[in-house]
Length: 197
Image 1 (cartoon, rainbow, N blue to C red):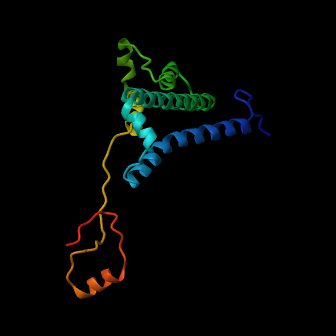
Image 2 (image 1 turned 60 degrees about the vertical axis):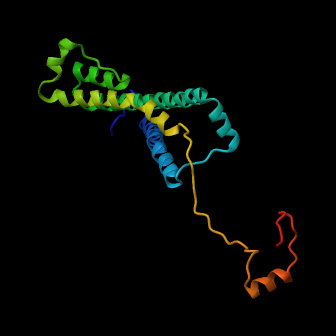
Image 3 (image 1 turned 180 degrees about the vertical axis):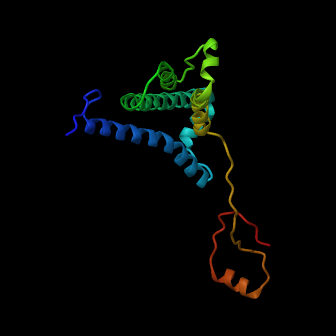
């Protein structure tokens, strides 16, 4: 019989926490793609007239509000990513050797900051240590694009939507006998104020 270490709670509690964390991460990954797919599939989503007037009258407020939403989304992504890094570190510590390099690397991922000074770079980019450091740099770069990406995805823009117009018209100046019989057989009120010749 194996005894479970109570460092991070029971096995079931950790798995529930991991499942909720994974669900939150998947939602944050999926919603921009789903939103873009719906907007692209419908060739744009039209606002109601009241909201469109507000957006047109107050473009600075609209830009502020959309940027604020982008920053909130970035904050949520940062929190989920930090929790995921903490959970990875907890599992990694119990199963592998852990050095100061790994602590600083995971700290950099958790906080989206570069943890090493310029003097440390020559030790970081040796042997097998350079790939995690490059991945950390890519991660930091990717996180800087989140607010602007969400802002560009949500910012309303004016667009014209056209459709082909098809219809039929009644020619009141027709000289065809069947048309004249049809017109004479029906009383048409002169609401349009047309002239009879």
